[in-house]
View 1: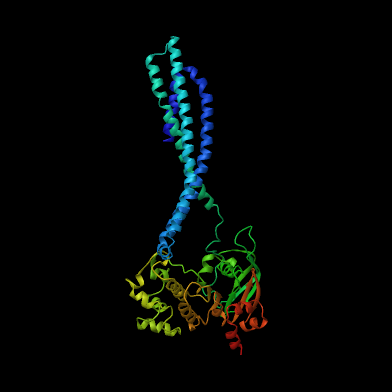
View 2: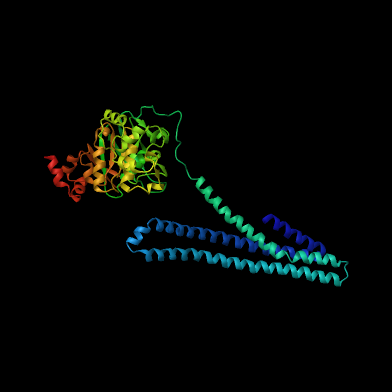
Length: 470
């Protein structure tokens, strides 16, 4: 439509110029005025469109959140507050939308003016030419005027279609902006691939390690030096912002080092591909990551385990084969404690899991993460506040499973939310503002009366720790 209307306008101006040559004198000033108005409107319209898009997204986000939490909103009788907030977001969007309508009317008035000038000039020059008996025929005058009357509509469409192209290009700008963002390291580096058995022992070392979340920000971990022995149970504690979760992100190379490195079984993790690294580590996160699909898909995304192994990590043994498999591994009969619930679902292992695991409770989603970790053949397990969002009973079930024989030959790094969950660790790391403040056995740290002592005291666990020491 842009090209069609541009061609139509140029043809109209050509017809008028041929029929009344003096009209050519007006084309240059009118074209300059038209281009000025067009560019001015384009810049304004483009920015108003950006404001409209920016203020429209929060409306959809808030509405979706309100639908998702409608039961909670009604339970706390907060309907009016959420309705008012929705209206406020609508008003914010309309404050950006109304100026675009006003700019549209502003443009229409000026384009109508230019079109009227062209019609007036065309008619005036035609009358003068006929009056002077210049040989201009009535048919040529009619042709010139009929095309001149359409020029206003064509000019309007040219500007509006140009604006449409510009506003659509805004989306391309955003795509290009994201495309230019620095990407992660390669998944596989062919010349630096670890052995199939790596990590055979699970020893982890941080060597003068420092990192930040992005360029220009302060360091979140500063000169970390740690030596975690194979099969050791390590607890990581600290106040909010101390760098506990950053330690986990660094281990999985979600954030890259600024200086120093991390080695696992004497292999520098920065020299291998991300896929080779992350496939060899297990994690039970604070917020369980479940995907839309089936129970089987979430437990075993690669579909490399059979049903008996899946039932085994879910809980009781429905078959003798399953029981024999896990008795050989030294497990009890209630690992993830989910077998009964999954067995009651339609389809059992092929039962549907909604987006984000919304048809499972928070505790059940966390137990699915535990079952997934049980299936991952890794000698290193990271617990990133895995029990922070579950009830005390589920927490006790998780802790009992983590202390079973299946994890005895694994290195476990636990980011602690409840201090009592890491008191039986071999050693404890106490972080403070991104540095290792203390690193020793729980008994030694309590006797030092340092930061760990304060945390234990605040948790009201001093008496139980003192009883263990005696």
